[in-house]
Length: 121
Image 1 (cartoon, helix red, strand yellow):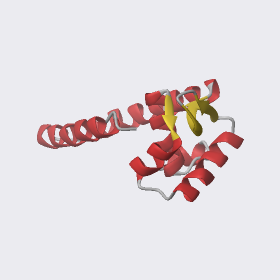
Image 2: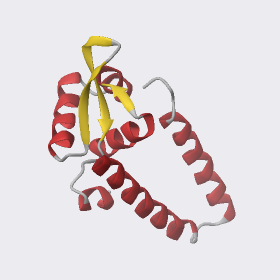
Image 3: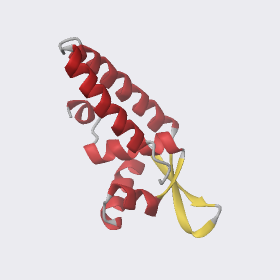
Protein backbone atom coordinates (compact mmCIF):
# COMPACT_ATOMS: atom_id res chain seq x y z
CA UNK A 1 0.00 0.00 0.00
CA UNK A 2 1.44 3.39 -0.93
CA UNK A 3 0.80 4.85 2.55
CA UNK A 4 3.13 2.30 4.10
CA UNK A 5 5.82 3.00 1.53
CA UNK A 6 5.59 6.73 2.25
CA UNK A 7 6.55 5.93 5.83
CA UNK A 8 9.19 3.37 4.79
CA UNK A 9 7.21 0.43 6.22
CA UNK A 10 6.43 -2.95 4.73
CA UNK A 11 2.86 -4.28 5.04
CA UNK A 12 4.10 -6.79 7.64
CA UNK A 13 5.71 -4.02 9.66
CA UNK A 14 2.48 -2.03 9.54
CA UNK A 15 0.40 -4.98 10.74
CA UNK A 16 2.84 -5.45 13.63
CA UNK A 17 2.64 -1.75 14.47
CA UNK A 18 -1.17 -1.88 14.47
CA UNK A 19 -1.23 -4.92 16.75
CA UNK A 20 1.28 -3.48 19.17
CA UNK A 21 -0.49 -0.12 19.31
CA UNK A 22 -3.84 -1.84 20.04
CA UNK A 23 -2.54 -4.32 22.62
CA UNK A 24 -0.01 -2.10 24.45
CA UNK A 25 2.43 -4.86 25.45
CA UNK A 26 2.60 -8.03 23.36
CA UNK A 27 4.53 -11.26 23.88
CA UNK A 28 6.86 -11.75 20.93
CA UNK A 29 6.23 -15.48 20.53
CA UNK A 30 2.45 -15.03 20.69
CA UNK A 31 2.57 -12.31 18.03
CA UNK A 32 4.69 -14.43 15.69
CA UNK A 33 2.29 -17.37 16.13
CA UNK A 34 -0.77 -15.14 15.70
CA UNK A 35 0.58 -13.73 12.44
CA UNK A 36 1.83 -17.12 11.22
CA UNK A 37 5.35 -15.78 10.77
CA UNK A 38 8.42 -17.90 11.63
CA UNK A 39 10.06 -16.62 14.80
CA UNK A 40 13.37 -15.83 13.05
CA UNK A 41 11.58 -13.79 10.38
CA UNK A 42 9.49 -12.04 13.00
CA UNK A 43 12.63 -11.12 14.95
CA UNK A 44 13.98 -9.43 11.81
CA UNK A 45 10.76 -7.40 11.50
CA UNK A 46 11.08 -6.33 15.14
CA UNK A 47 14.76 -5.45 14.61
CA UNK A 48 13.81 -3.12 11.74
CA UNK A 49 10.98 -1.48 13.71
CA UNK A 50 13.20 -1.06 16.75
CA UNK A 51 16.00 0.50 14.67
CA UNK A 52 13.44 3.03 13.36
CA UNK A 53 12.51 3.90 16.94
CA UNK A 54 8.91 2.67 16.54
CA UNK A 55 8.86 -0.18 19.06
CA UNK A 56 10.91 -1.37 21.97
CA UNK A 57 11.42 -4.75 23.55
CA UNK A 58 11.06 -4.94 27.29
CA UNK A 59 11.45 -7.79 29.79
CA UNK A 60 8.26 -9.68 30.61
CA UNK A 61 7.68 -9.21 34.36
CA UNK A 62 5.78 -12.52 34.43
CA UNK A 63 8.51 -14.59 32.77
CA UNK A 64 12.24 -13.97 32.79
CA UNK A 65 12.58 -16.04 29.61
CA UNK A 66 10.37 -13.89 27.39
CA UNK A 67 10.23 -10.37 26.10
CA UNK A 68 7.34 -8.03 25.36
CA UNK A 69 6.99 -5.50 22.57
CA UNK A 70 5.54 -2.05 23.12
CA UNK A 71 5.14 1.02 20.94
CA UNK A 72 7.26 4.08 21.45
CA UNK A 73 5.61 7.50 21.39
CA UNK A 74 7.01 7.90 17.86
CA UNK A 75 5.46 4.56 16.86
CA UNK A 76 2.06 5.51 18.27
CA UNK A 77 2.21 8.85 16.47
CA UNK A 78 3.06 7.13 13.18
CA UNK A 79 0.18 4.65 13.53
CA UNK A 80 -2.17 7.56 14.26
CA UNK A 81 -0.96 9.48 11.18
CA UNK A 82 -1.31 6.47 8.89
CA UNK A 83 -4.73 5.63 10.35
CA UNK A 84 -5.94 9.16 9.57
CA UNK A 85 -4.61 8.91 6.01
CA UNK A 86 -6.31 5.52 5.51
CA UNK A 87 -9.60 6.87 6.90
CA UNK A 88 -9.43 9.83 4.51
CA UNK A 89 -8.72 7.54 1.56
CA UNK A 90 -11.52 5.15 2.57
CA UNK A 91 -13.94 8.07 2.81
CA UNK A 92 -13.04 9.06 -0.76
CA UNK A 93 -13.56 5.48 -1.95
CA UNK A 94 -16.86 5.06 -0.10
CA UNK A 95 -18.29 8.14 -1.82
CA UNK A 96 -18.09 6.24 -5.11
CA UNK A 97 -19.88 3.07 -3.89
CA UNK A 98 -23.49 2.04 -4.19
CA UNK A 99 -25.37 1.41 -0.94
CA UNK A 100 -25.12 -2.38 -1.40
CA UNK A 101 -21.37 -2.20 -2.03
CA UNK A 102 -20.96 0.03 1.02
CA UNK A 103 -22.81 -2.45 3.28
CA UNK A 104 -20.76 -5.39 1.97
CA UNK A 105 -17.46 -3.61 2.56
CA UNK A 106 -18.61 -2.48 6.00
CA UNK A 107 -19.42 -6.08 6.90
CA UNK A 108 -16.01 -7.31 5.72
CA UNK A 109 -14.15 -4.53 7.52
CA UNK A 110 -16.11 -5.18 10.71
CA UNK A 111 -15.12 -8.85 10.58
CA UNK A 112 -11.47 -7.89 9.99
CA UNK A 113 -11.59 -5.45 12.91
CA UNK A 114 -13.02 -8.16 15.15
CA UNK A 115 -10.23 -10.52 14.09
CA UNK A 116 -7.53 -7.92 14.75
CA UNK A 117 -8.97 -7.18 18.17
CA UNK A 118 -8.87 -10.86 19.16
CA UNK A 119 -7.48 -11.13 22.68
CA UNK A 120 -5.17 -14.07 21.87
CA UNK A 121 -2.21 -11.81 21.13
